[in-house]
Image 1 (tube, rainbow, N blue to C red):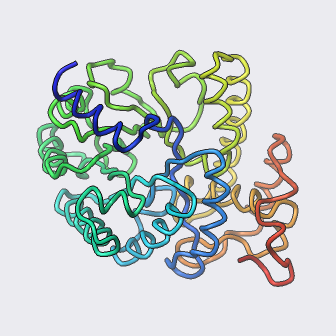
Image 2: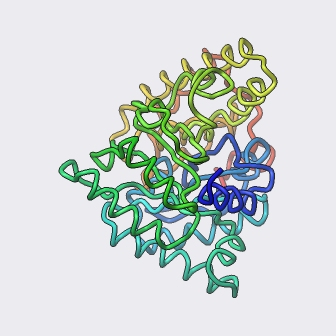
Length: 357
């Protein structure tokens, strides 16, 4: 093990004494008005999720992070800190910007926010706020060369904060090559995690020497098969659908760790089939993106169970409600696939006549 790897290992041990979690959720964002975070609704969601996972990415694509202004993100950070402290959640703060300068400014704002609230500095301030690092994408643009992408990412990594690099060509219109990721892994021990949502998986499949960087898959589908214990190439997952199926996906990981491959693949296949159908059902929603819309819909049923169609539908980023016909279709899909839960995690905390929290 070289010095770079030793430093990475020491940093990871400081941040995650029990190891980096194998299952992370790209958290949805609950709203109670146009672009206004609903803290009261966020808390029970985190309480429910942290029964199964401890790691979250937020802001995320699933959480409408690409649509948020800096002011809206700071509002979300307050809510995240509150819930991180209440439920021992570990947050990777997504800096979803398309230029290096914007990413640097986004990181600066988060650090300043954490330092102001905690009275501490740097990484210690971040940890006090429940923030365990930053997740950043390459600078955007299909015309960028690997050297240009690398230069931008090096500027960010040179800040020294724990960092996850996020392959998301659906938004950046480019990809980090396996060779670039390996070079950055060899130069920056604070590069601790790599997330790939491309569905091409070129970096992980290349099997270069990434010197201990933790690889998580962000694309949906074939969950058990992509995990190393299931014969795949990823250490874990950072998925939108953890919002919807936290118990099932957690069980897939647990079964794989126990060597129960067939059982893990059976659950994985059932979740995969249901996810595909839900994503197709929310295609009629024109706002935001399928990751956000699909998981908001399923979470609505996880929260309210058989009362879900009697309370106000979840709000989209604009403040508009998710269409009722879409929710009804999602309910039918959950029932057909055996994932409908009559008793939701909020059904004992609401009066249906008064609507949702």
